[in-house]
Length: 234
Ligand SMILES: Nc1ncnc2c1ncn2[C@@H]1O[C@H](COP(=O)(O)OP(=O)(O)OP(=O)(O)O)[C@@H](O)[C@H]1O
Ligand SMILES: [Mg+2]
Image (cartoon, rainbow, N blue to C red):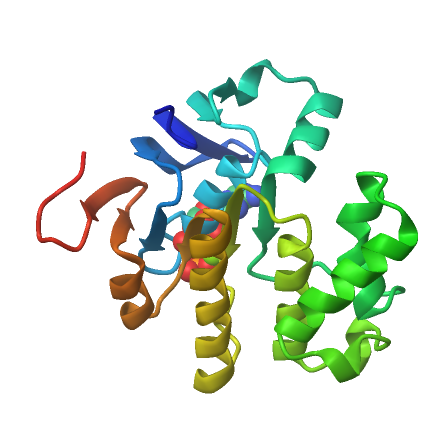
């Protein structure tokens, strides 16, 4: 079967004035349907950069990314935006909620962009907010929520359209252990129920172990890619 993500010889170099900063230095890997994978690595290793590239929020310097068999580089901006909204749920390291909207409205937004009727979007958004433990916070705006609550709203927003692929950048990094674990349970459940392929950047070794596959980014390359059986995937 076609992998959900296929990355070949991917590189990303940022330019600051005359200075070139090579962040991703040629990585290749595939992630298959229903797989859950942890991306590990020290601060500055390029984890968020890689996730943004996979999420088509940033463009590679070279190499290719196929998602569900489609070459991301061949899509125009409008096609890309629509593809992204329909296929990929993204939880950012910093949540990027819309400040002037309530939690419920923030979570409804991807559905409204897909022209789901407002009432239906509200019902779906409310159900997922309840699932992340925010039943009593739906009418709060982001400034009226704690950091962890904001992160849970961002997760709910990423999940509202039940994406085929979830890309999450330290989704439970700011949460207490109990709340973090309940969010992890939700991700495992969605993976089981919907077959949602999930890539999670995490510093949490227990989560990484449970996910079954861990890929370590080290100095812009994949240092290690293991499926938990002790064998290497390449
Ligand atoms: N827009 C940019 N311009 C120049 N350099 C950048 C830019 N974005 C990121 N970098 C650099 O690229 C490197 C990788 O950044 P990235 O955010 O991917 O790291 P990370 O692995 O997610 O780290 P952390 O665990 O701290 O979140 C860092 O050294 C960073 O300074
Ligand atoms: Mg990061």
